[in-house]
Amino acid sequence: MELTISFIFGVLFGSFLNVIILRIPKDESIIFGGSHCTTCGNNLKPWHNIPIFSWLFLRGKCSFCSAKISVQYPIVELISGLIFLLLVNKFGFSTPVVFIALSFFMLLSLSMIDLKYKMVPDSLNLLAMFFAIIGAWSLHGVFTNFQNALLFAGGFTLLRFALSYHLTSSAHRYAKKTITPWTKNYHTYPFIEAMGEGDIMVGATMGALLGIKLTLAAIFLSAILALPIMIFLVNRYGQGQTVPFVPFLVLSTFLVYIFDSSVLTYIEALY
Image 1: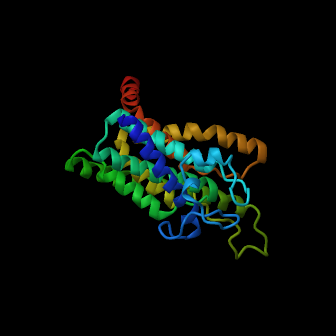
Image 2 (image 1 turned 90 degrees about the vertical axis):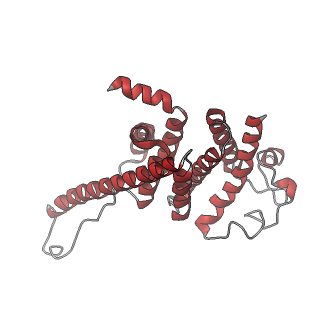
Image 3 (image 1 turned 60 degrees about the horizontal axis):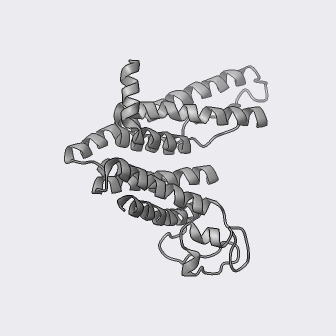
């Protein structure tokens, strides 16, 4: 019964996450203004807003104008339900688990926005980090989470500057080979950002949720998960393709969080 309630709660919150994902990138209020069709503008009826089921019963189309409703809506709701169900199944229902779930819900929203718009809103990032920090079973745990968040925020920041410097220097050296009398007084190379500020804050959230060893494992796993996608895009579309990395960080964080004992056992056996 507890797991069923947890899944339903997660699905209901997932419906609200869809509002966040849709409105925050457009700088719209997530509180005021009823749900409406983005094509015809008609306000939705209560029975149009039943998570997952409404999309299935409407066959993915608006009941007013028959415009297609993105499959993102039931997917986000289903994933949200599974997140809360798996967390409660592992730790039981408690206040810290609620905060941890809220952190993962914010990370899920960030992932969807990053995939769709290639942006990472600071408001959601800060909320994810805040919920991760206070999602502890003791006051000492809160301070430990905060300490780990600062550690990985600093680590990601140093990594960002180091990689950006290396890539920009490489571009500079290449540009110097092609300098002409017309361009000798101008910069002919870009400043290359190796990592966005949003990734740094996600790293802080990972540190608060997982601790040092598990966060390092999650970062390594995220790179493994992203590598096949990057190879596919480069082979199909050529060099210069960018891949939103936040979804891979979030997915690896959740997997490591759920299977933390197995991951730690593997790390200890390895080293």
